[in-house]
Image (cartoon, rainbow, N blue to C red; front, side, top):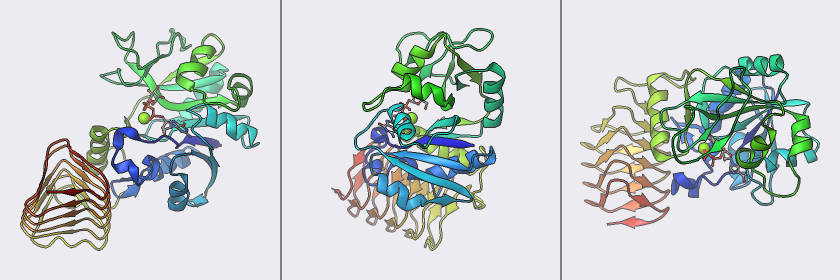
Length: 343
Ligand code: GDD
Ligand code: MG
C-alpha cells in the first residue's frame, strides 16, 4: 500500500519554532513528528510513503532518510508551493502513483483505523473517501456533511457561522489515481479543500466516520495538547517510559536539584539548574536553563539558553538559540525569534 504525506506547509502558526525546523519533523515527545505517522501507516500495511516537501525540504530528508523501519521513503520536492492537491498531481506526473493511494495531511496525530477506511472505500466503490472526525469547535477545519449512506453533500472549508455537522475533514483520504488524473490540473497550486473536493461532490466522494484519537498539531495549543496526551499514553506509541511525574527526560540531560514535571519533555543533552521548575513544558535538544528559573507551559526550541532566576510564562514559544538574560522575563504568550536576546 502506498501513501503520500503532505509535508510542505510553512507551519506559520507554529512560528518561531518552524523557522528552523519544518513542522513534519519537529520534535514531539522527543521524536520527529512524522515518525508517529509512519508507525501508524506501517501498522496498516503501508510499505511506501511519498513525502511531498517544499519548505525546508532538506531538513525532512536529513532527519528521516530513505527507509524507515522497512517502509520505503521517497521525496517529491516542489519548486514552489503547490497547495494540498497540486503536490499529488506532481507525484503522478513523476510516474510515482499506484492505482489507489492514501493521502495524509502531514500534521495529524491519530490512531484511527485506516484499514477500515480502505475497506469502506472499496465497499462503497468510491472515487475518493475522506475520514471524518468529530470535534467540538469546527471553525478551523473543513466541515463535511454527508447523506445517510455516507456520500458527501458539501465541503465547507473554515467557513464561519453555524456548522451543519461536527464531523470535519481529518486529513486522511483514500484516492483512486483516476481522480488525480482527471480532476487535479498540473503545473499550478491546487487545493483539495477549496477546489477538488467541492467539484467531486456527486461523483463518488464518500465520507467515512472515524473513531479514536485525532489531533492536528499545527498550533501551539494543540502541539502541547498532543504532547500531554502522548505522555499519558493515549494515543498509544512507542515512547520510552515516563518518570513518576509523567515526564520524558532525553539522553544525556543534567537535572540534579531541579523540579521537572509534571508532563514535561526534555530533549537530548539539556541541562536544568538546581531549584528551577519546568512544568508542562517542552525543551528541544541542547536547551540550557540556569538555577532558580521557572518555565511553565512553554516550548523552548533547540539550544535556547535561559539565565539564572529567569521566568518563562505560559504559552510562550522561544525560537532556537535565543537567550533569556539572568532574571529575564518571557511574558505569557510571547514569541521569541531564533537567536533573539530577551532582557
Ligand atoms: N507539499 C505541500 N505543499 N504541502 C502543503 C502545502 C503545499 O503548498 N500547503 C500545505 N501543505 C501541507 C501542510 O504541511 C499540512 O501537512 C497539510 O498540507 C494541511 O495544511 P495545513 O496548513 O495544516 O491545513 P489546516 O490544518 O489549516 O487545514 C487542513 O487540515 C484540517 C485537519 O487538520 C484542511 O485539510 C482541513 O480541511 C482539515 O479539517
Ligand atoms: Mg493542519
